[in-house]
Length: 56
Ligand SMILES: [Zn+2]
Image (tube, rainbow, N blue to C red; front, side, top):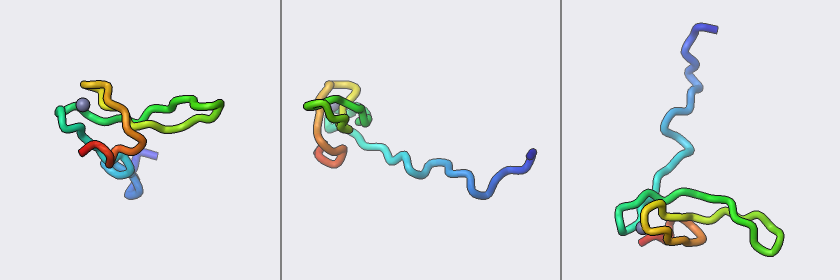
C-alpha cells in the first residue's frame, strides 16, 4: 500500500490501431449467430473489419 507497483502495466496490452480515415479503431463485441465475436470498428467512419490489422 502506498508503493508504486513495478508491475504496473501502463501502455501495454492496449495497442492502438488507426483507420486510413484517421479514426481510432476499437474492438467491440458483437453477437453473430448467437456467438459473441470481437469486431474492429472505426469510431470515425464506422467501418468494420474482423481484425484491427485489416484497416490498411
Ligand atoms: Zn475510418
